[in-house]
Length: 587
Ligand SMILES: Cc1cc2nc3c(=O)[nH]c(=O)nc-3n(C[C@H](O)[C@H](O)[C@H](O)COP(=O)(O)OP(=O)(O)OC[C@H]3O[C@@H](n4cnc5c(N)ncnc54)[C@H](O)[C@@H]3O)c2cc1C
Image 1: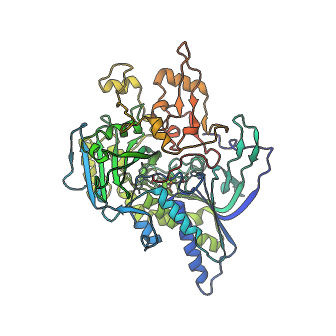
Image 2 (image 1 turned 135 degrees about the vertical axis):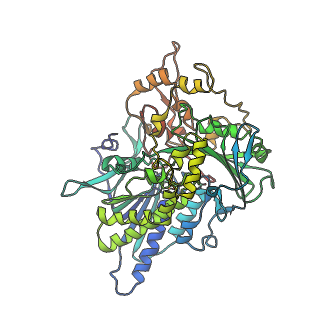
Image 3 (image 1 turned 45 degrees about the vertical axis):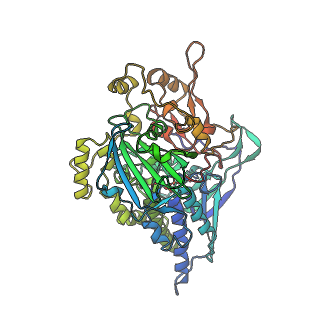
């Protein structure tokens, strides 16, 4: 287990303690839905005659991005099911839709020119009634709606620029642990750990309930899962995909309004799993992206490279012709779903959204499922506030409500999806998908097992040998031209990423540099390839030897792939001081 106890320790510092009734960690759609709904519920509760009023409450939300929305990254086609429950007239309320889905295509690609379009839409890709959206704009809109509310008896504090670095614990009389809040990261620390003149100690944010909505591979969620054993009843480990996306401005009329395309197959190597998306946005913009599974055998699985190749396909290239690249981003995506879900609540806290694997990988959708998590969490928090009971059993009502809701049913019906397609659309996978369709997710062998992503990586010789390449040879990749086919670092520039370089690296090498050196010698340092922001580099000296991995952490777009896929599990992603990271506005 990673040692979470020392990462933020600084005995020489007095930390200010701030008290909240409810604290939300992470400003994504799941937590913002929870906070919005909780405000509605408190207002409705206090309006009832004869009930004990909830007064003097403080609700807080911290977000590591400089502004809410800066780190929000998705596809996205948004299923409005949960949003309608939260805000039935969301369009009239100014929801930033990029357009309703009107025209859909699903392709199985076989080569740069080949492939076939499914004559009938597979049910999971029927997106009619959904909206194309920029998640960055959606969460900014949600935050504005929350800030504009005045609910008597409730103070709301949205605190962007603050990263939760460590869970705060207390011990119950029976020796079990309960969560009492989080500590935020110190600011103004030199790379060697000494204080700068502008040093600001992180605060101890104490709360009766802390809701963790950190997205995929949350750092604090990881601490909670490990310390409390929240995954002990899960069928499968938490598993992930990695997605890279570009946004293009194309000539007017080139891509029809409401156009949505998905594909799988080429350019993925045989036996690998993933797929593409092309979504028409407002203002002649098009989002084009690729997600690849991180339980890939390919040591050099590289979503950015696969995306570049995908753009050359005969069906895709004309959609982007004459266009200009305007933004890039990348992020992991939790895909284990129902079979990988950890326990959703515990004394003093809850997990919502992707931190709890609330994603339907078969539909490439998690926003509505995470939002529904937020809505169910808010209902339970209201009861807990009324009853003043924040223990495990009280908060576990949230888990029962979520798993018994339409969101639970959707996740259960696709519980075997990822394990089914983990090696691509093989004939067995097709058969299983057909079974799952008619038998509400049941397939022969149910429940199908998945393995931890990092453990699936094969050696370079074995994987590339299977592709017919000789020892040491790699897939030749693509010819970057700087216009259509973009080098990684040029793309990264368009993510707007920025960190103060004079702080300790937030990517921690936990087992020592020697492990990276031997990985370079024996495995070719996969991190130098799979990282979508080229953060990791190995620089051999004149004798051809390396002594350590170079980490350009200021390029890090907070995707978490290294934490997930490092074959040696030698990297732990921790939040940098608040405010650093990408600056997404359209993603
Ligand atoms: C390539 C790609 C395509 C996708 N396409 C779609 C799609 O088309 N439709 C769809 O519905 N879903 C899609 N998804 C999934 C969807 O984006 C997620 O399921 C959804 O955003 C999860 O919401 P969340 O609130 O749980 O987490 P997130 O959206 O990840 O938000 C978490 C927030 O918490 C912040 N945070 C994290 N840790 C801390 C900390 N310690 N302290 C403070 N702040 C912290 C982060 O900065 C972030 O802003 C896609 C995902 C990817 C990667």
